[in-house]
Image 1: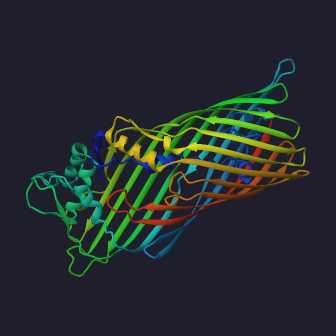
Image 2: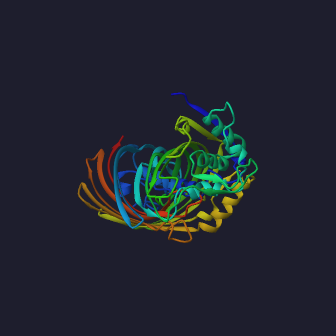
Image 3: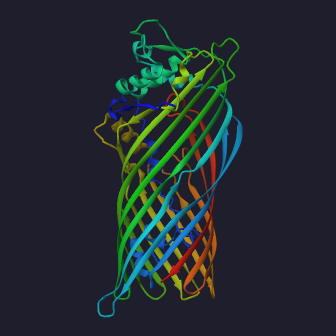
Length: 499
């Protein structure tokens, strides 16, 4: 089929920005999966090092290696979501498999320099796997007509009409290009018959709903795919016997797709509208850059402390959006507005907040270890850019008021029995919102086992996290949410080869 598109400048979105606080939270959340050993111990490696994924927490960690090595890890992801909506609970389960970590380190030793070791490392890690899905179904007092009325309020009727000789898909794209995303949504509601002008006059700016109801039935599916990955170039060194210092350059890649499908019925018998469907598809892609520095100090043979700074990540992203809508009274050619008709938005930027991590570890010789990491990140410092965009400035004020400090705690331990290592970990990450009702705290438990063959090691990890999230079905006009209990379970198998 023919694919047609238009370009919508972000600055033109006078009524609403297609980018908002949800994007900031999504791309600021670091849920690095890492190697099987890293996951099994809850990611508490800031004072330990000696693992390829440890350089994501503290770049000094690569200098702890005594040998050059290569590491690779793959995971099975299980998403189990219970969505509470309209007094109903619906469960959705999804599985996917992916290669989540590949990396290596080259260690160079010196006998005649205070820098006893130099380490050069590269590593690819999956920061976030976006494969997920939830389904919500229930009865609500807020129909989809409210979404379109919110955008139509104050919008002149004239541009919402299809002109003589004009195709409806061309009218849809022209409105988006010239008047912005908000007017485009009002156009959809009007052409689908969900809203009507109070006066049949091109200058009219007020509208009413064609849908009569006290409650409606809604079925809503949200399916997401994609990833946020990080490729790290790392340099670290061991100074004398007790100090490790390191730095890293991080290159991020984002691919994110979100499909939402809404079906609505159950209107009153005298309602002109008897059913509505409204579907949206968002595609986001882009790249980012960050850097990190850190150090690890051995206070004695048993105790190590570490500290690291992770810079903000500067992302450059582009969005494109496709939509389709229908109802029993929609205009006959409404079907020509479909997923082959695409809106492209101007490139925008997101700056995520920096992060500080402090760590301590206790080493029990060759028998095992305990490790603890504390992380601090002020999410209110995140920004959508350019800040000169009025809609972004308004949203940034909202971000600053709604988001707050995220404190994170990670604890991990390992016990060795000859060639076998038994591991366990715990993780707690506070909500990024000042009001934790929107997104709850994330808690995680993990465990694993490893077998050392001498020149190589095989590791297996089980990692489970749980978090409650209130998902808005739409960003504007409707404030009903589905409370989704997310349980994510990862099983990771990793292999490490020394050389």
